[in-house]
Image 1 (cartoon, rainbow, N blue to C red):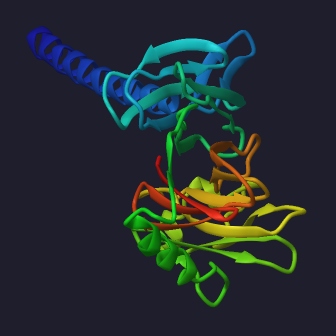
Image 2: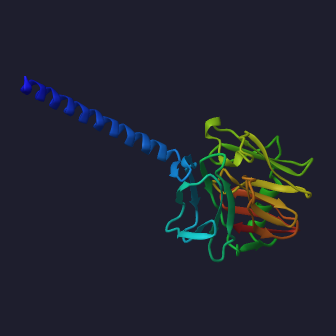
Image 3: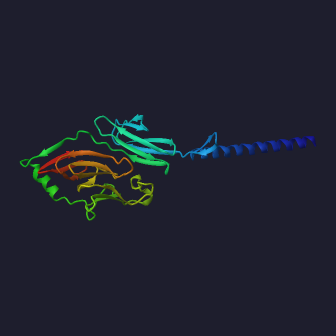
Length: 276
């Protein structure tokens, strides 16, 4: 009888150990799940801090990337994706800088969303332009392209290479509009200026007429615009600051883009070609 009681006791002990083991496993899983959702143990008990993430694509190799004014790395290849993980739910600043290029700067608010995906752009401070005179062979073909160009109005919208975004000029109030054509679930950050995403946004409104507009190479989120005496690259994302970088300065220039990265420009009475 003593032997039987001992055996029963051993069985209960093994059962209790197995139960304790399974409970411990469940507690570890639960703790890991809470940790990934931002819960932390502090002097006030268990509190939640949103664990955010910023993903930034940097097109130019050799760019220094700063988070909150602290240099984090220098990109080693073109179109490198830089990821900052486990960020608190607050506003961060991003800076991409490279010698002889204009800096790109952005404030990112993770208080409303725990992820943000961005892509910088940075124009060279010196972009050569080639003046084409009337006696040169290319003059007439460049003139023809520009004269036959159709303004980017609501009736003749420009479409990005990916066919996901359209952009156009409203001359009545000198504004630039953009329309998302993709799936609502895929709408990018640039169409969510105040946190709420809209398929149709106004990205710029000025005092002067906008003479020309097109997309920047193969980007969905950057435009080329001709305003006053300059041609510049302008990002769709209106969250401050909205980056605006010069490409060409002249006399009331307007342009056509016959192929990605090449601009035919009417600069006053003259013509010019720019490869940006």
